[in-house]
Image (cartoon, rainbow over all chains, first blue to last red):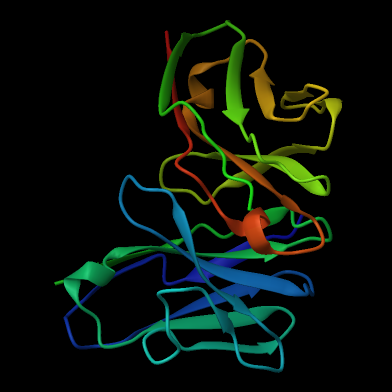
Length: 113
Length: 112
């Protein structure tokens, strides 16, 4: 299984600002995904990070709010733009193996004040 | 798209076997069943995946009846450290779709 790290592990940000979350994998992977998990809730898929092309966003998530980069097969970033308190959540990246078995990073806990 | 239904929560005691059932009445022919475990403040961890009958690994067993409309995750002799949320996902391995869709999960509390 892949080892995934995320930076930062947590942050407290002011509304109206932006935060970029980094996801690093210890091996090359084809599939990378970004999720959001609000306190006590299940995970919601934000987008699939595609290497060399624009990310594929799920319904309710847009590129202007959550721009994603995927410059290579081991790294991706998610930016949460123009933040509001409603964006307070845990953001998780994951990688998918051949059978869509997913391996998750430890998450980034974001609090917007 | 196959929808899954799980109990919201379950309680158990150390040393007991725990069985968590997931209903997926409209599972498609090509769909697989995958279970994840999530501890507090961590990302989900893949536990087991199966298509039919029984699958066993070092962590758990997965029982799938012939009609595949449900599945049961079995955790033998649970300990306090098995307290977690367990998610059942159903989807086609060849399409991201439901393989990436997490339902509500089952919150398992193991008591001493």
